[in-house]
Image (cartoon, rainbow, N blue to C red; front, top):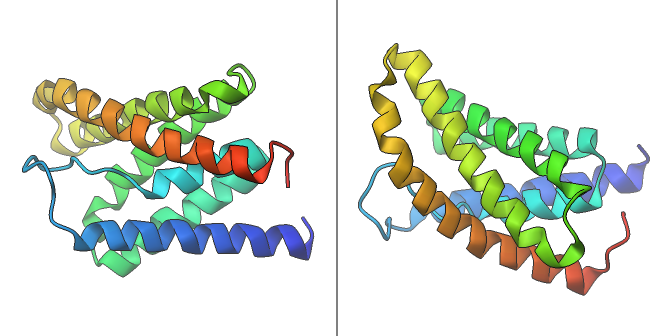
Length: 165
C-alpha cells in the first residue's frame, strides 16, 4: 500500500467511526435492544467495492476496536467483532457476483450475516441457544437497515465512479 491508500483508508475509518459514535448518541427508534441502523456500514459497503479485501478488513478491524474504545463498551466488542467479520466475509464473497446496480443487496445480506454473527457470539458467551429465538426479529430489522445503508452506499459509489481507488 502506498501513502495515498493508507490515507484514504484512515479517512474512511474515521468517517465510519464518526457515524458509529453519532448513531450512539441518538435514541433508538425501535425500543428493542441491539436494533440500530448501522450507519457505519455505509462506509464498509463502499470499501468492499473500492478496496482490496485486506484493506477493507483492516478498516473494519480498526473501526470495531476504536468504536469499542470510544463508546466505553468493551463487553460488546465480541458481539460487534463477530458480527462485523461475518458480514465482511459475506459481502466480500458477493462483490464479484452482484452487478453494480445491486450493491444494496450485498448490504442487506451483510446486515443479516452481522445479526447471525452476533447471535452466535451471544450463544457462545451465554452457553445457550435460547438467544436464537431473538434472531427472526434481528433479521427483519437487519434487512431494513441493510437496505437503507446499502442504497446510501450504492448512491455514493455511483457518484464517485466504479473504479477501484
